[in-house]
Amino acid sequence: MNEIQQAFGLGGRVAVVTGAASGIGRSVAEVLARAGARVVLGDLDAAGAEEVAAAIRAAGGEALAQRVDVSQRSEVETLVERATGEWGGLDVMCNVAGIPADGPLAELGEDEFDRVVGVNVKGTLFGCQAATAAMASRGRGSIINVASAAIDLAVPNYGLYALTKAAVTQLSQTLAVEVGPQGIRVNVLAPGITLTNFTARHSKNPDGSVDQERYDGFISAMQSRSPLGIVGETIDQAWLVLYLASDASRYCTGQIWRANGGATIPH
Image (cartoon, rainbow, N blue to C red; front, side):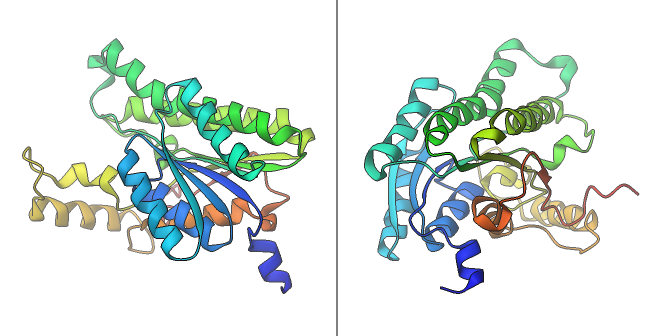
């Protein structure tokens, strides 16, 4: 194994990925597995997670799937226990699971607030707590939490989503300071527009079909925000997660990593 393979390889490592049935979570799970990690895929969509895990196994990797509602502490703990029980420890925790929220803050109801905070903030916190407990005795580990480019921009009707992702960022940076002495690194991935089911809602009709005109308009608008003139794909986020999960980023913690095509550059 050469120096590059050693720095970026995850052979012998164990990873947990939430939100792994689709989108960024799926790409992250697949890339970590291809890098040699044994991966536990957690998602509310149990069938979807198992489908991804089966594809990873068919490609020669090691993967398990488990249903998890990240807003429930006990279920997140059980997910991490699956990794430590099956494979003896935990090296990488990727808290990817999240849900969108649209609408003006002035009309925000308490039930909607609790629902979104429950997944985006509490779910991330529970993942961090379970991972820290599993990693502390080993004296190493990497936690990657997913925020959003929304933390850098004030966009109408995205307020609730943005504030939950800002909370994830502060949570992560504070935790990085607290657990750094234990050899645990904590970083934030703040994706820009990335084509997933998450963003597809912007171009769908009420019946779920795609409005091609709206889709094309959405893509054009997102491309115009990037100096590169492109829109991200899930693999763009997964490669960055691989770096943060690997020893190549051993000197990196408490940072916000923005794969967003330059869309949030001040200008």
